[in-house]
Image (cartoon, rainbow, N blue to C red; front, side, top):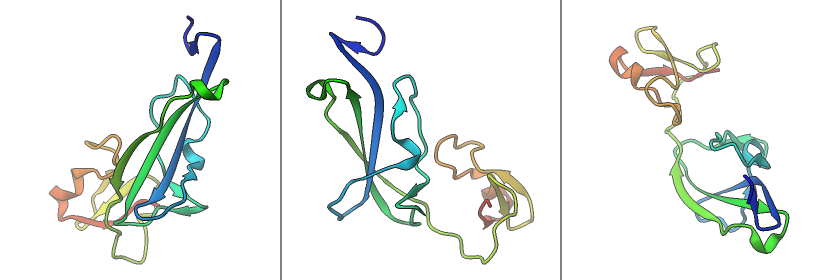
Length: 132
């Protein structure tokens, strides 16, 4: 078959659902819903119109959805925890940049391309402020 096809079925999108550990209901991730078949990465940023809770365990499941539902994949499920929250009252003022204790600004994905927890501030006294 052709790319994206299984027999006569077109498998066109990935759907990702999220729930906090211990909760029953799976919720579609607005950041990662109906992703094109060719897309292989996605960053979950919010759930139910709110940012993800800090220091919380989430269950995430993904399914390849086909035009014929019986050919859609089973869900693959993983668990992942969010990072502890920041303890300050203001953000760094710059999107995607952490501010370190010594005032250094660090790109949040430097050295940690998917987690957003750059080790850069480790060398500058620790994290003082999260990105805007």
